[in-house]
Length: 154
Image 1 (cartoon, rainbow, N blue to C red):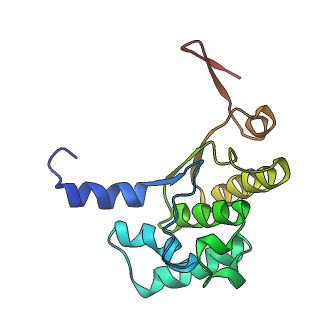
Image 2 (cartoon, one colour):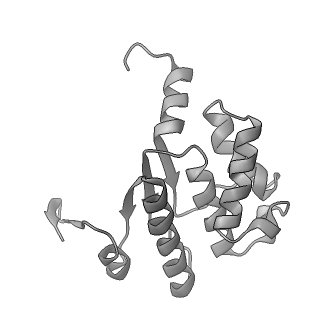
Image 3 (tube, helix red, strand yellow):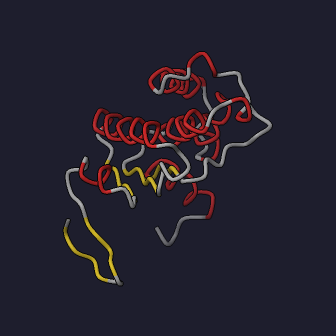
């Protein structure tokens, strides 16, 4: 890995890792479909098959009909589902979700966590979910707790 160029490292990272943040980090000037495709573009894979995959992912997250809307036209939960689709576009080996429900109401947050768990299981993607919500944490197969600088199981 230390011999790879910055571009090669970026491409590998884009293939290996998917990331969903508390803030959606969608590009406001481009539509939902192009926001999902951004992950493929960054990883150097903006081909037609990724466009088809983006459409499938948008359908899976319930946003097929919103593909050509701008992020400002979406609710917070819809924006987060776009972020989930973007994180999954390259079929990552590991999906990091850092407080993905922090900006959402309880019901929408539950749906987003369920979507993350279901989709990662279907794709065989390892999910690392960082959350303060104990209900969400209990839905995972393994829980680690960080308190006062100490890491412990469940």
